[in-house]
Length: 302
Length: 310
View (cartoon, each protein chain N blue to C red):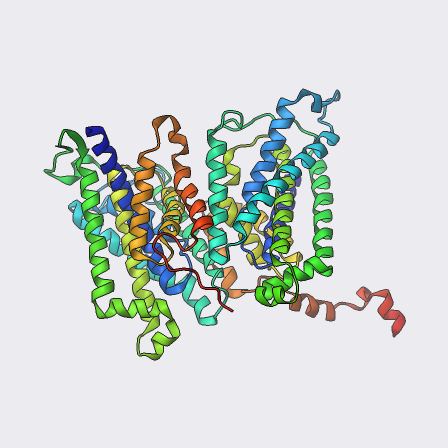
């Protein structure tokens, strides 16, 4: 498999996690591509318009990429904080529609503004890595960090509060959980992940335009989570990797590619309503593990 | 003054199409509480059906390149049949993407994904068959009707008036059916509560099929009408209308039939009023409305207040 596809798969996994975070508290938000687009635009603008960031070497400094990530995180975070307060009062399909509207408004504005390059976009974004392998390693570290955050979230108080809200919002509120703040936390985290992913994607893709944050992207990223499963962070990661690779793996079937993709998201939820990766399946796998996989502590007790 | 009349008629004609489109959404939403994301694809399908049935030839890029039907139907009949064709496909979509989920009692939000999968398949199937190029329905299709009329000094395209008239008739027929007929009342009962409706002797599954059929019919007709008045801009052109339709739906109130009509007309008029210098922002109008309505009045203009269920 070529390294370029691997980078795209890893970026897909990151976007899957971004959709998964609000879904953890039962909030179906399709805003991820919007924040992804903002992150990409921030990176594209800063790296092509600010000479000070380019450094003196032949490659674009990684420190500048990190700085772009911080700025993108700040911007998307603040935006998510403000917008989240407004839209998170809505539920279910209403929230989904409101976030679709957000993404579309953002797309139309980016398309029409002078400094974002309009319909053509921004070209010649400088490269911090010479090879796709470099991007692969960088994205892998990023993905590992976000996975670690999600794993911590599943095991700590705010994360458990999110699960409680997903199962029953009123019951959670009656147990003293601040539902508004918890939902907002998930929404902001989701925006941060999407924004930072956008920065990496902009450098990797070398150019950036308004098309990258459109409705299609909303649905593709949602499909990552629905097919992978939204009960544990492994689900969206798996879904993102698989579904990003799928169109490429299907290249031999040529024009039928997107039809098969459509069939997967049509049939997937029918066969696996909980997604491919559920806690039950993970536990079953763990019980049937080969003996050499046993945990050291278990062996000691026996 | 003539300029204003022209603006008004243009806005109303576009709005009427939006209304037809949103009505399809609203019918399905009222019985199932979910949005059919394949609706935009049905709209596209209607446009292509119409084009083929009036004797249009397929371009050079698809699998069925160069195909042309041996007959050419008059526009009104082609439009009607296109609606029926889209309705048939809508029934298939219901069967594959909605019914299995309903039978299992799964999370209704999953239908969002499955219906979108159905839409993706349909749109790409069209692209595979007829290619991605745009088609336009020739002006001569309307037979002896003049291209433009002059009303009170304003020049108005006949197509716009036709569009308004057909949309008006359809809306009226739908309203009469829902409020006046036995099956229309049954549909209302199902949208109130499918289980209770079933207990009262209404075949809920059947009513859901009827809702899908009508919804597909309206989408197909709307597609054909837009194909006639503007052009068929490729297999994906229904998606944009599909998204704007969401704005119309929310503005009027989810599940409300008069709301969908009012919402369509308001957004059509608002878009017509966008000054030419800002025409790039026209596509954001519907979403701006959508966003504001959701924040200020989530039930929409004519919808019922949202009940918090415990």
